[in-house]
Image (cartoon, rainbow, N blue to C red; front, side, top):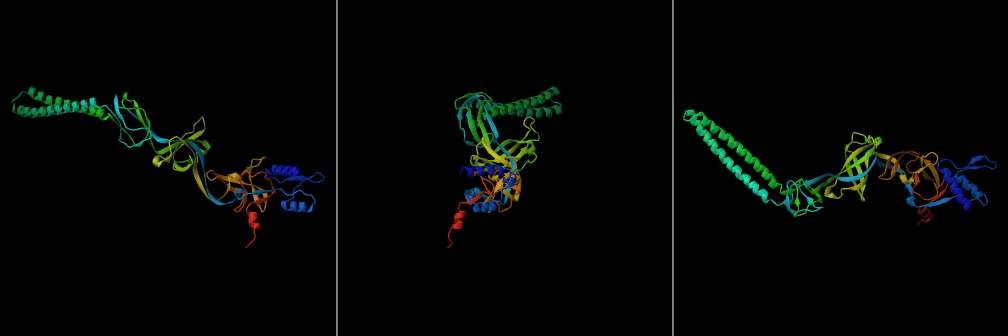
Length: 392
């Protein structure tokens, strides 16, 4: 048994490069080992000959080559970030009397988030309103006086100096009214700023103030994220960037979820340090089901290939001597080595396009099933039982 196992290992190591096993004749000259059928006949006719090595496989260890549709693309990874983060700051200095929202709560544009103590601002606004009312009345009186003096001046009843004084009084009243209106606008803005409102709809990410605090003008109060759309910025090797363009579909996988995005834009320059190009992908996130900061892996789909032969990537092996890919194919009931030429690889489906070396209907061995070698006999569990069961 030890000798037989050693022979299998030797055969497999030589078969790994796709070349036929080689033995020696009695004279020492190399000779090709006969095919599995010839070898079986020779061994069955010779007394004490070693049995042909065999392996038993499950049906899941076998894949049948068939035409299919695959997607070729460029792989990318990165963190999904909210498309916009907004910092809400205090517009005035004062005491907060109410902070109405906490982290994780949804807010709408224009919704009140917090309130300042506003008595001082309200007093200033009312004073400005009174000043405007007085200035408006002064302008009306000055305008009436000017109109009367204009009539008297035309009749020669008053001197030109008195008429000019009336004209100047109108201009002064108008300037006083403009100043009062400007003050009213300023105090109205201050009164309005005592109510902190959400500048856009989103989710409270951080709350940085509490009720009762005295805050300075410009102090941060809230951070709001707009997570209805997430963005991923990924670095792609420059040699692959030529296949990228805006509008391409991107298939993502993250947190056991699958979702799609769209290439929004591609950087026009190559990073001289990394020789990479940054691509920006927008990911719709209705309902906020995907959290910002989630790490995701994806592929930008550059082309879709239909009706092509594909082999599971788990079936691919690599020759030791030249590194070329091959598969173990089942021919009848024995194993053969089939060198293959590959095209596009669909990592999402776990398959690779085969451009040469296999035909539709070929069966290949998938995964690590143990030691394999050319000419080994294959027994597929289930098929043997089906073949041996009696017919009814």
